[in-house]
View 1 (cartoon, rainbow, N blue to C red):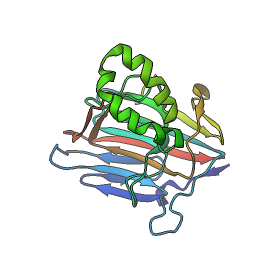
View 2 (view 1 turned 30 degrees about the vertical axis):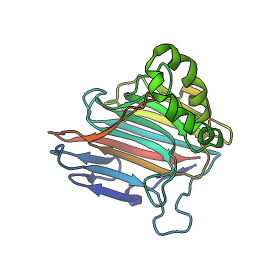
View 3 (view 1 turned 90 degrees about the vertical axis):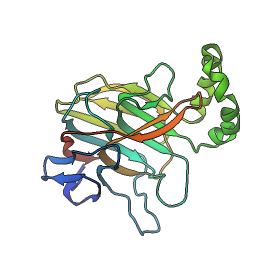
View 4 (view 1 turned 120 degrees about the horizontal axis):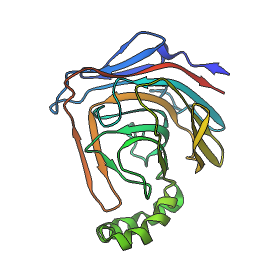
Length: 248
């Protein structure tokens, strides 16, 4: 087992974002408005290197963490886990295996029967060959999936094609919990305090990097073709505290 040296991970701070302490390490944003993006983030994306993504399966990540506010009160997005930093460098399709929070009005409704916002365990690999093959079909079908009957029939195979799996976590965000991600070669699973909450998830392909963050953005992206992005007011300090991150 190896405990990650959290204070020495790369820091990405935007707007009012800042990092406090060591263990626990606190990522904070405060007094930000819809006029400016704020982000407090740590990651191990290797900028300037030929191979910037260093995490590959099989890999187990355990993070002990808590938040300043409960779900529905915390504003913006926050979380931790693995992703492929698809916004950096050449455009690519998103891959992620993480614990992800999105506040209203976020609506990222990728898994049937799971709300598009809240504190969730989530996985996606939109660049899988079967997903790319069906991408034109999804674009054409999006307006028609506003009809519930067509959505129920058409979305499940598209969801499987992009490897989208989600489940609400269902524990208080303000209390300390141990969150684990077991990233396997073929399937992955999520655990909270040793209890499996999402199992047999199709594993996103590697490589990816570790990330933990809190920011003031929201995103709407639904199978029905609704796409919207924006910023939220955060009048008081809100944060995520991470006590440790252990790989094994």
